[in-house]
Image (cartoon, rainbow, N blue to C red; front, side, top):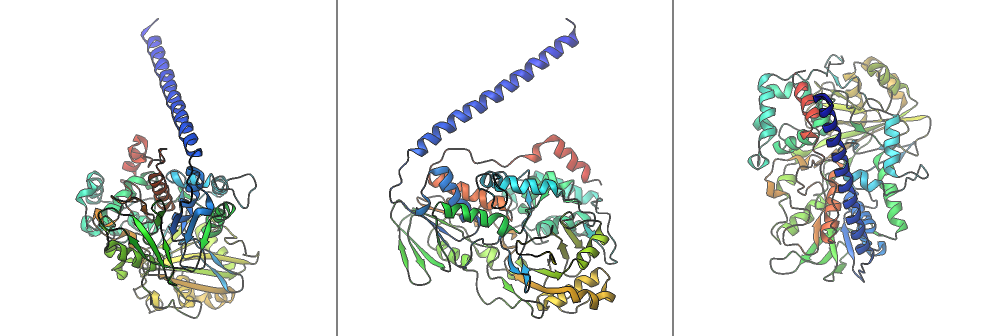
Length: 565
């Protein structure tokens, strides 16, 4: 046998050994989980109750994990929501006559939403018999792939070659240094503290900023986390091929099937009631003893009861306008943030809401949803961009004073939407600036004025009178705290999901600390929910870890090459 044959034999033996090792590890994991499942099936919780404060995806996911993974009875789970509807920031409402609205649209990602997909594999689809929601979404997305051809548009309404990132050597050095710097050294630093002015004129920044809603003054280590977590997307940020879309808006595609699952398990929904305070025992432990509601009701907690609280919501205090009316000024403080303020004064280790909710001028932006009769305007978008509805993701007007972007989803985007109605969504990251064509701030504008500014960005103003004949409504939506989770902060300002010293209390939201993961995603809320449930109920199964794409040599090599495009 020659050296080559010996080498091949050795390589084959190594591969077989490796395969055997993986198979053996998987077998051991299955056996371990089987033992855990048997122990959980034998648990008896008696009269124990769980109270989930807030009706967003974090609380709904927590309830689902309690039922699925702890064998807890649904009738002993109570979700308390201050609004008259569940869903939190995952919304979608309206009709053909008055127009539809989404405050925002969550972009999903197949490769990095580990716990999200795990959760929705357990939730049956309402639309597709014998499919889970995960299967339904991925099936839809694979049949409607994203490949933006007009990601950036300049002031002359010309499509920019966004494949070129636009970095210089100073930008590349700063980015490389950031990825190598430990988070602990980045407390309270903003992105503009780190990068030179040229960085904020690159195509990369315009695309990354508007895809994820960053600002120059956003937290530096949030950018660092995004760059590490989404390194897979860095090389395709110009086409947004990594975006995974739901068939309908997130309320109908995610919240309704999740709610239906929980209803079948008799989960108790308490709507239109706000939690105003939580009592804790004296001493160093964090043990919740009572929940106070707006109507004066007090829920006394037994020692074995658990409380999981949405400590803040980024769409709190939202206001809405219409075609003839601007979104009004904010009159109310954020209800979830105010509760967080109260309890943070009572106990250590519950975080600090001040960096997130004391800077409205830095945390706001404004969205708008346009409802049209027919598809004439959408056809114009298609002819301009080369993208049919649902295939193009964001189109950003990089030179617009409001930094406007729009998305044309696959139609229909609402189940009630009839065949003669079309919709699209957009937003401006700088609503306090005066428009290029409408000489008002975006916040001062009616829906009609916001749409006119958009039409002018396309240079279609000569056709304005004809275009507006087909408009049913334009609903502006001002969100004062939508970017709050990105604010510069100390590591200690966000509490742990289960704070140190807690015996029965957890926090689930975009405002808790989860190492390595990135906020402003559905995955973050679901991961927080699973962490809370597994910790408080002593579930020893593994929580799906953050996939280390930033350690994959192929991904890193591609990212390095992208920096020189």
